[in-house]
Figure 1 (tube, rainbow, N blue to C red):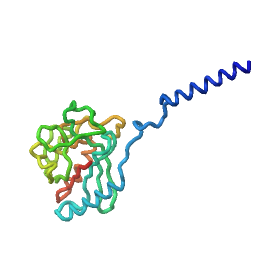
Figure 2 (figure 1 turned 90 degrees about the horizontal axis):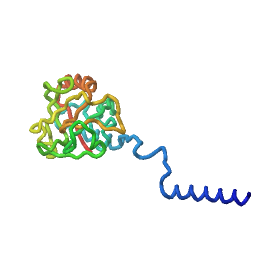
Figure 3 (figure 1 turned 180 degrees about the horizontal axis):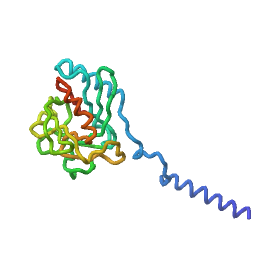
Figure 4 (figure 1 turned 120 degrees about the vertical axis):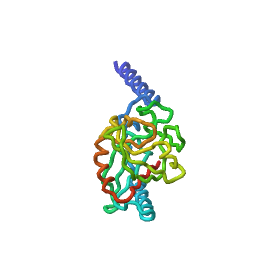
Length: 213
């Protein structure tokens, strides 16, 4: 009887060891389930550089928009940075361009590409001047023109890249899913635009939007 018990324990030990070595044991904290967060040091560095830029170029020095495209599109990666308080005062989801992927899907949620080429359907990195308000066919029918200020986004107006809302965009984070992807515009939810629109309307100077990776 003792011999049979010994055989059983030995078999159980060997089986568990083989399963562990094969990598078939599942763990609850996989990398796919870990919600990405913004790098606070990186954000502060960008905010500091943004303030210097705004002072030098006569932009609004009360606030700016920082968009960290290195973050998964299912987490809030559009930050309203208050220069006076030196902190984030707003945080929202924002979509990016789909490129060759299907429109309105989230195929590049954790690895978007970027381009300044017309027809690429991709977002462009760089600093933008946000100024003129107009009518949009999307969302709450409000858009702001985006003047690309660098070689990486100089074709923004030509490409009709504007800041607007979209009915498909969520107010809350959707991770591990991503936000719907359009044709290159930084899109936000309708409620987000309802919060941001008054800020932009009150600004007597152009506002900086900095999209970076």
